[in-house]
Structure formats: structure tokens, C-alpha cells
Image (tube, helix red, strand yellow):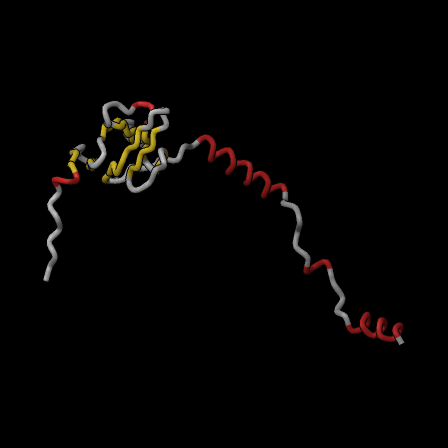
Length: 133
């Protein structure tokens, strides 16, 4: 009985052909294209544009020399378009290195810089936005 079921299953099962299978490895042409793209990404640096405004939200300097800084609501020192240089913090002024122009801006906590014109504004001096009725 079991043999009859096995034969019935084998007969009714669709035959698998190699035409439906996909290629496991890449062709020579595809490998060459991958290599060209891999080398291109190493040789051409991606230019990151600095944001229009950079805000220094906060700074903590600890006695064991571990410094934490919040810029644009993030404590990451490497952000898109600029880098915060923690080793250059002096009298609460933190140097921010702009990647696209290689310019260094010194900001204190609570300050915002307009990257386009270089104007630094203290956040407590900003006028509150008026609500439109």
C-alpha cells in the first residue's frame, strides 16, 4: 500500500527543470561592474552639506575629562555636514568644524549659528513666535 502511494506521488509531482532555477554566482561582466563601483566609492568622497542652522543645546564637562555635548538635539560628535571637536572645548566654547567649507565655529551652550552668514544668536534673546488667531 505504501509503495502505491509513493508511486502515485512521484507520478503526480511536477517535474523540476533547470530552466526555472536562477544563477547562484555572478557573471564575469557583473563582477567587473561590482569592482568598478567598489573602487569608485573609495576614490570619490561624498560631500556632506552642513545644515543651515546649528544649535548648541548643552555641554557637560566632567572632572575625569569625559565631555558630553548636545548639538542639534543629538550627542553625536560626527553629524551630517559638521564635526564637534570635544578636545578643543575652552571656557564653554566648543569648536564645530564644518565639512564643506573647512570653517571652525565656536559656540557656547544655548547659541545658534546661521551657517550661511555666520551670525550667532543666543537662544534666550530670540523673540517668541506669535500665534495667529
